[in-house]
Length: 294
Image 1 (cartoon, rainbow, N blue to C red):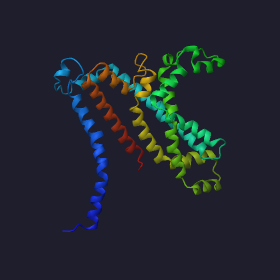
Image 2: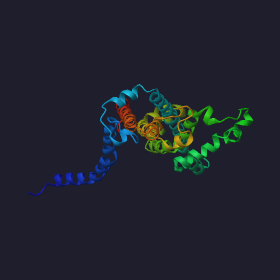
Image 3: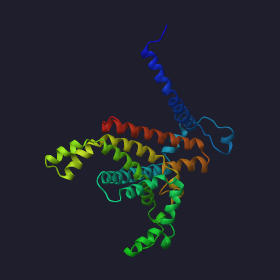
Image 4: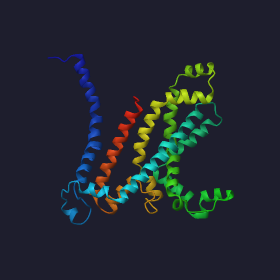
């Protein structure tokens, strides 16, 4: 019996979705399932557990929630995400997008200066900033601030968390700017013209028209940027390796240290599973609280 047009169209759509489904299963579902299984074992890279791993149930999770190092890394991660992604990148990216949406001298230079950091690999960016922040009086930042009376210091030692927030903000402004620019371009010019005819000031237009109409774009940025910032590893590892004293040990570095420095794959997998649950919860909260359709 010949299929109807609707049935053929449905099968065509399924075939188009098949490659994406295969990639989802191969690179998301299978690794996540493997991590969940490993988190329930005492799998290790050396010792008796490496030769004969066994099922230990929730033991890794019990140890995890009583480990001060985990809670410290979780706190550092949240401060890092809020400081660099939610506040730093968003505010500066929105400012750059609004500025580029108006007549601006040297527009191309301004845009290139913002986009360039995003093109630099994480490790390269880390070494660039090490030369600026480390070295005491010889560091670039110390030399710039010396005329202002600020004493030279090892910035990655005296203010490590603030420094990695600054570096990640610098590197991620371009992504926020691109998304905000696309959102601004979607706002009809007639809306602004009507507001000006009604006597609205530039500040009133921004707060009562631009920001509300940018809400879907802001939601999308917050969701993608928050989850992406949680997963950052290379940049922070290059800069501080989680030090000094765990002051910059974000959750990714904590997982690496437990899995490949302490050789405890089971415990490290438990941390990764908890982090996956937190990321999923944050995504669900964004969808439910902001009530925005993307």
